[in-house]
Length: 253
Image 1 (tube, rainbow, N blue to C red):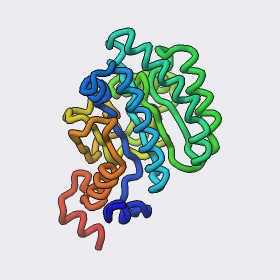
Image 2: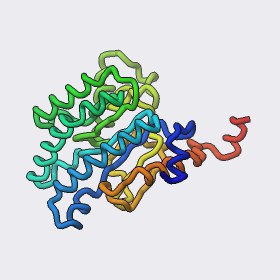
Image 3: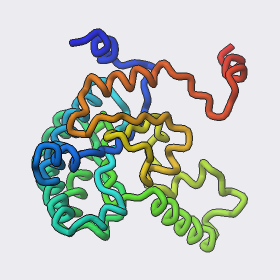
Image 4: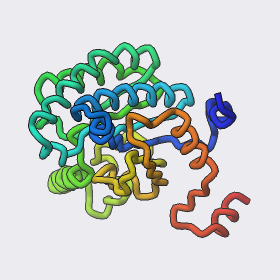
């Protein structure tokens, strides 16, 4: 074990509460090996399991994995159907892992577009792990940040028309309850693998003040060591939330 691993495996008071990962690069990883894209997605699932175990070990509060976006439905039908079957098998295989590690699972996105069997399995895993009190693992599947905000606005309008909420009561904080991540802290750190430098419609509202880290590493090659180093860098950063450094020092005084 390296010195950086040793220093970080004990819970760090400055570590992020909520980390989101755009797990990108499975297809390219497979192509480099002369394999079909689904082979890369299967390797990506194994990597996700490793990162969940690390998150449990360091007592991270919340981890959100971007598994399938609203835009991914436009991919070739064969790849999409293969991914849906892979999601189903993964849930069956790892439910006991989440239970044994006190992980609470939730899925966010548009469930109406998911296969009925997969939707039921996701609901079952949420129910089975609902009383767990450790890491909150969120799977963003059939999810899009713009779509989440639009849906939230629609629900807000309905409540306003029903006189549940007054226009003067609408604030940044009050609007959060209309969003899919309402019971989680805002995103502290976003990581995207594979070298792409965009956030691809992921948690647009929640990432307003997130630290963002882009790595060239393809997702199946993303190791615990690199994850811990990113967290270590985050823990040493000064988050200002729009303030200047002098204001932060005054507040600390």
